[in-house]
View 1: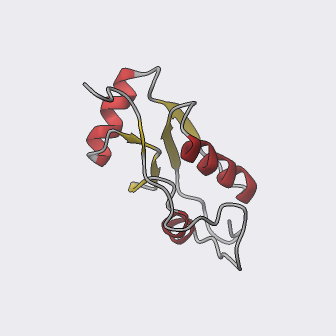
View 2: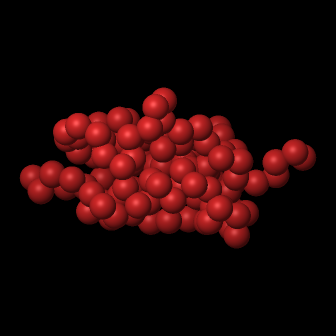
Length: 107
């Protein structure tokens, strides 16, 4: 995160068992990005809000200043937060992530 900009509000809709959710939250911590984590597996109202915002039932759904990112899409996250990436890091994965099922899978 650059020091010159005010950070937009970041909300991560996640579940405890989602590996991409955990990667996204670790990435934010490493980069010094403040965020609010909402566990949609324990909060049905938040799960409905996540679907309303994103049209998706998979996690992570990340709201960065009102712009929605579905999955751990590091390049999009970096763009929205003004993070300059130099080379590869531990989060470099081919093709980025697909969302994990959040709730109601198979129903």
